[in-house]
Amino acid sequence: MRPKRRRHVEESTNHDRWLVSYSDFITLLFAFFVVLFASSYRDAQTVKKLSAAIHIGFQQLGAFSGGDGVNGVAYPNLPPDPSTNSQTPHTATDDAYPASAIDIVQLRQQLEAAIGQELRNHEVVIRVTPEGFVISLNELGFFNSGQAALLPGAAIKIQRIAKVLSQHKLDLRVEGHSDDQPIHTAQFRSNWELSTARAMAVMVLLVDDSGFDPAKISVAGYGQYRPVADNATPEGRRLNRRVDLVVVATTPPQPHVR
Image (tube, rainbow, N blue to C red):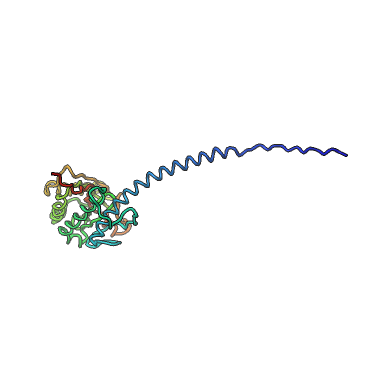
């Protein structure tokens, strides 16, 4: 009887051990991006809470519920935030967002009383943005095309706005904006120069003629680079030619201390 042959079983070499190290690296990389996302998400939630608080303040006045507002008031459509409850009363220990919203609501009411006709004529538009409360002075009613000198009667409108603004403890940034149509004149070589000159004209009027605190005001010229509408249409270009008065800080009422 012939002896059975022993079969040789060769152990195969494992060529996939590198996958273990690779998977560990991918796991660490994933964890790193999760931490980055969590940090950015928290910042976005802070901005969202601020916008929601402002939005709630307007809703309590019955000013709007969605879309464009009346009397020249515009605002963003904000997504619901479960962390914001408009039915919950806020106390002095709450964060600063509700206090800022109350100040902004009061400011809006005073402005509507002072420049109601200009709002209805769309010469002035009030908006709420992540940067703050914005009063837009459209080119219509304030400037001739391509010029930075205020039109007759424009100074009176701005002075009425300044009278309201000076009653509040806030910082103001005067921003000049234009459309994207090139300009090159003897006075202005670019839209940047035109937009900055218009902002300067408004700032000088606020400080010199209206008594606005010069320590609480700044000027910026953005040219065509921060549009609020599409420059492809005449209407969009008209909306982009503006000077914005941006309320960049509001101070909530301080508790009385004896």
